[in-house]
Length: 414
Ligand code: CTP
Image (cartoon, rainbow, N blue to C red):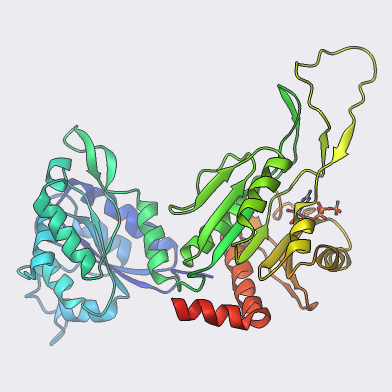
């Protein structure tokens, strides 16, 4: 799912030092397939050259509401009719005050007033003393109440050298927020329990058994499910990844037994359960309490089976939609269909881990989805983010088919 491709973004820049970052923001949107136009206040032009914005957007910059673009085209009306979203970044305390009070005395404030049918996203940036001023807080509260979106500011060093709350958020967070705004909340009121990453089974205090799972696929699903409005609980084995999105409940575990415990805890009230973790099948029965010393003799390690978490979830399934993963190197369909049966799954995601661009560690995947009715769909190489949306699309379709009462009931409550 390409959340941003083809979207028309109007970025209004007001007069703060963070204006120098906006060309990079424009580049990120253009790279995501958006068409971008820029508007500036007179003060913004003291921080940034309109020529830079024109070069990056490929459009003339909107500068003055009293200039007609073409004969009879009034810029603020034409631009707001054109765009899918208006982003005000950086948004100064001044523009927030004007917007909250319904003042339209320059181009950007006029654009804001004229954008009454489309989403507006404000990304405030100012000195923290200004940001924490109760009047600014009140203006933000008024704008939020009116239905406008906000992102940031964040804490950190500001242009004046002071530390505090007032920095423009990371540009990637602005892009992410716009994706959120455009995403249909089709998982609203659903609790989605996801496992990700490998497990680590200790041998002694310094050694363990693990596998090559990076956790990227499970984290991508968690992020996409959150974006689509779900309540997401992510049970993660040890990974190098940080929490994929604000609002996700992240529970870190190490061993398969710890993962099992956490999953059992949240399973009863989950609507969708996705086991993307590469759970180690074996563990040492009792890890050595002290570091093992080497010797010249053959070293034998006795391993016992870990519980098959997914299989036991299948045995306890009530109304949950249960999704498993299968990392295969051969006989894909046959093995996957067998797993659906053995573990009582509704859907299985099959990866060919032989391919260099799919499976472990990489950012792309080539998945095949097989549902419990035997319906198979193969997907071409895609980003793990897109694969995550494809998996969730299929889960939503399946849920409507398998549990229509449950689905309608949830929707009634939304
Ligand atoms: N799984 C699990 N508990 C385990 C092992 C795996 O819950 N102890 C889950 C994984 O999260 C994944 C699916 O089961 O969703 C993988 O199934 P599995 O049969 O273990 O696949 P493989 O690891 O490929 O196993 P096999 O060696 O049998 O092919």
